[in-house]
Length: 352
Image 1 (spheres, rainbow, N blue to C red):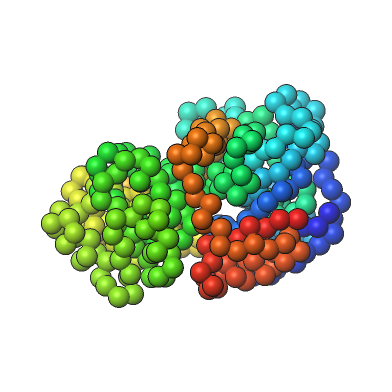
Image 2 (image 1 turned 135 degrees about the horizontal axis):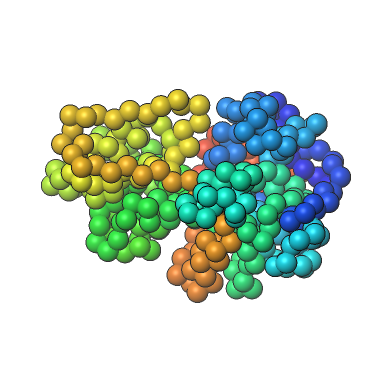
């Protein structure tokens, strides 16, 4: 099978590898569509493969690190102990897989599993393996396209999770800093959740235009205006109820802490990569009773089934995120394009 492998920091190559065999509790999925995520860029550019393997033992192959954690496909083979799936089922798997039995899986979320769960690796291949399949895999309803389903594996769940965990609801004001694919999903989640004033901040005009389609009432180009001053003016200097940090940088995190109202919530879903710490001002009035929540992609079969139901019934349509299409053999080009943020790129549909 053809597979995308990280062979060195910043470099991926296409390789011909054996089709995997499912072990206990696993299924092997024939990929129908995959995509590149911002987190893939962190794994590619910032984290040596040996470091990743140290955190998630067993993911590193002799050839390198298998890339990709967002995909949809057809069940090819079923391992011993799997009861919910059979060959031919159309499925998605969580980008973060949990064991389903540890304390964290039972009380917090599968995404913070301490019983052997990990990030999915290897979805950018003709075939990939989903561990703990009964816990982490969901069937895709017939009425949901591959483009819609693949977004459920990560960014819809994470983006919507930023709004849910912040407790934002009817009429609340929300500012979302960064309108990449993840931030756009947070913007759409705020609109779906019934929020009132939704403010989108970015420096890429095409992304700001897309944010209007996804529910933003006001957009601010951070290259042209002081986003903090603009947001405070829009809210009569009170600040927003919720500020979402959706890229993972110190400046955007600090901006969120400055624009949230007293007693408001900063909701962080950015991946900070090798940034060892973030800080915030303590003299700002919004420091009083401020709440900060961080969210890793809410995962597991039940979570994905609920999100698929939203898509199946027409409540949400985020397929406009797909701006480009490439074949699997051109996956290295997809990484170059995604890194460059040119050509209006948001999400790239990768098909066999």
